[in-house]
Image (cartoon, rainbow, N blue to C red; front, side, top):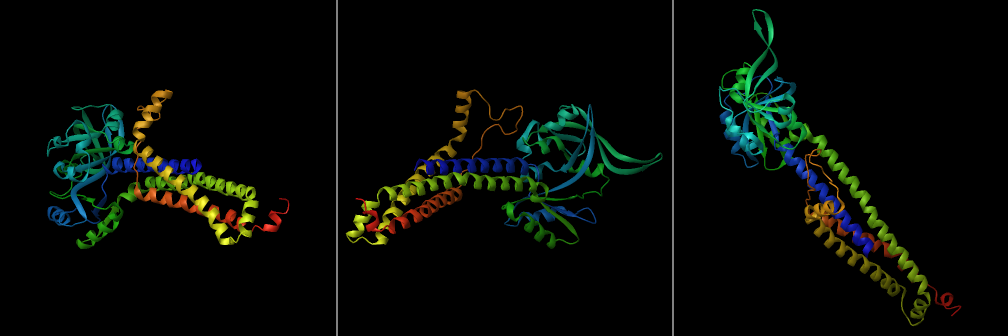
Length: 385
């Protein structure tokens, strides 16, 4: 019973923690990138206010926002490449968590014509700048001048910094006002580069974006979050599946112990089984005795494991700090990891699945010993009695 309970508890706790990490990563990463984007291929998108109004009218779209995005070189006391995104603060707050992730300044400090710049905290460290400092943004596009072609560039003033707790966003993303981005890139007046969408269901992001683009005139490029960061989440999913298989072996070992125990009981009770058979007990009756015994072990062990797993998964954030204080170690040092606490996301489907697997293994492990007991021959078993 304890072997099965330990296996189920471990499986529920570990998978819940991995679910928690996946949920935390998704929240941090998707807090900056969009669920889906729609970009025109042949021209900038004008009349975008009507498009966004139509998007917001859909049941599967939470919000839509205009944007202009370009890879650029940023230079100040240091230099670094970054993705520069032109946004409208009023719209951006509805599709991302940038406004709530500001550590200095405010997203509303990005105003048309003031050339303000909001940086990720890691990018600000690399550029060695703070609020009020000037940063030169160099876009990879050329403009004609009397001295020949030269790259587009403009000096911006840092008005704020954000921190998502995710390396790529914090070190490779900068935001400016969408009107300033259009002027920097010499785009037509009142035009944008595309539309960012926040959707009700992340798993349908590509299909929703594709359906929307088909309703618009012209050719469009559709991308969803899985194309930008899908490899990371697929790696987490694969790792979770492998961990599920590995930890299931603990329950398999416990089920094998049931087989060993019942085989020993059958060997020890052969004379009693023989006497029951001489009194009229059928093979099915003998078999049911051992099936019930082994299944009862599995049921009690599974119930103990499910209870322990639920309690541990729900209180892991309390248990881990206690263990760190007792043994004097830090599992996630703040100077190394972005996630400093052990997250947990207990899911009903996981608990039910693990419980059914444990009960199934326990039941199957009783069949061979029970069959062996039912085949006991009274004459051979009582020969030396």
